[in-house]
Length: 247
Image 1: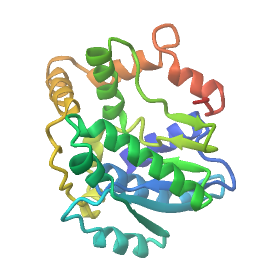
Image 2: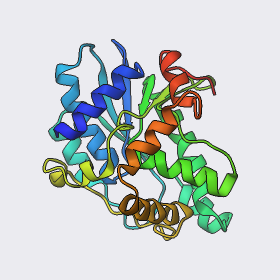
Image 3: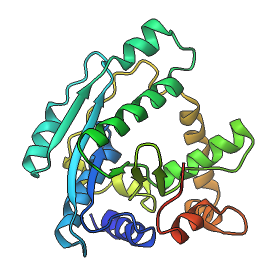
Image 4: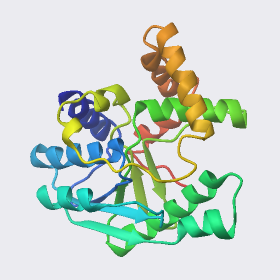
């Protein structure tokens, strides 16, 4: 897990993501990225220069066929408390609202539920499993569909909820998660969402994948541009503000 732990530790230190005494909730979706983040943070916790607590949390949207038993067993194995919050998000999105663009509303509702659960569990940090490829894809999503230069920040402070969102995998490439021998043994829960695989993000993901075959060091160049204070400043601002950016 060296290719994950090294970049993760660099991101945590560069953006001052975790401080002594923090209670860090890790949002588990059931996918490879979030479970890899939990596994990496559990290892990092053993040699980190600061003491912090870990808590795993999942928002159960109410989709049929989702079985979180493997995640429950894994969290028990690594001695991390795990909370699953059952909701009716899927029913609201697909049955009541019958959304044409279900992902947008679902994401907003999930975020709200995650933030509230963090408060209920007295966690002041929420760690999300977004990696470098996600940052690049979000950049192009914003460029193509919103006409602006934007991507998520490594650290975001939510004033109203008093929670800091952190993305410790922001320097980790997706391929290093996919091909890591330790990650291959982690439990992954396949999504049963009917919209899964049919989103604009999937289209952008294919575009980015094609660009990687044509442009040498594509990931490194885009990430470098995102971090360039003269071209694209949010990440530099986050670092300068000691990992806190108001929202």
